[in-house]
Image (cartoon, rainbow, N blue to C red; front, side):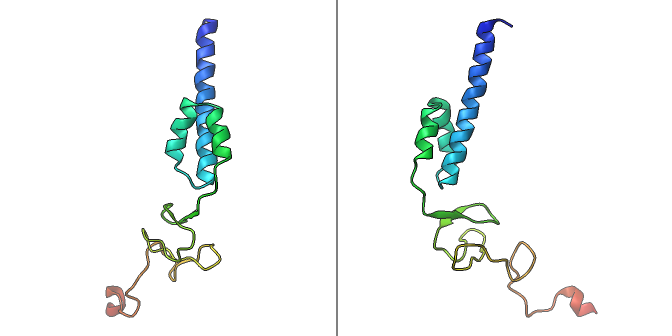
Length: 113
């Protein structure tokens, strides 16, 4: 491997490192990680500095479906996950992943017993 080829390989690895770090920093602030990954690829180093100084977005991430929703939302509009007022998430009434709205009706198995 020639020194020029090694420099190119190192530059590509560093470019992806900066792009990933930029996306991660932007995602922490609530911004679009894919968009900031591209910015990090095109402007390595500078994109990371800009992403670190982004203002915090007023959104939160739903722990069940991973969509970004309004910070003050009590229910996720995508999956119906319920939050408590302080912003942390509240477990569903049932331990399953999807809410069961037919709690009063017996299931087929219960009818047979």
